[in-house]
Length: 126
Image 1 (cartoon, rainbow, N blue to C red):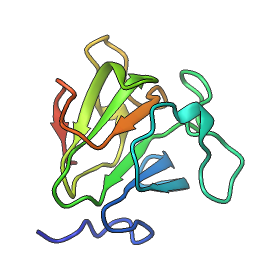
Image 2: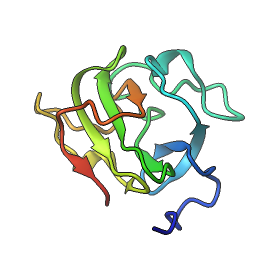
Image 3: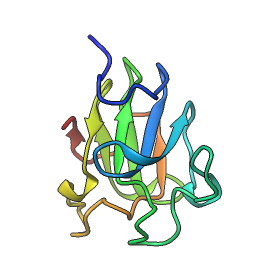
Image 4: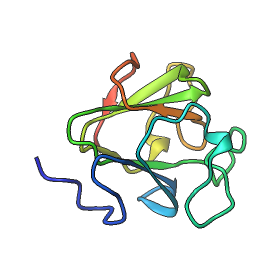
């Protein structure tokens, strides 16, 4: 399977987390699971990946460059709460298109990710 073409800044086996939809804005190219986005920053920027619900600098699009592992994305820190998955070599271009089981959209509201298939939510690749 070929790697996603839309985000040339991403590293193989990593997940890329973008502050804006369309894989634009601040970028975090990450190689490990993170249980709390509020304590990590985008590369070359002082902004945290999560600064409270609805903050426009929070993660809005995701690119999974891992060829064989889904990335589970959670509403709460500690890999808890409503969640969704991004397919291996999959992408979510606009997290506003995802409605969580709580009724909120995922855009600017998520707070942790895990390289596992543990989330019971839907798997996306769009």
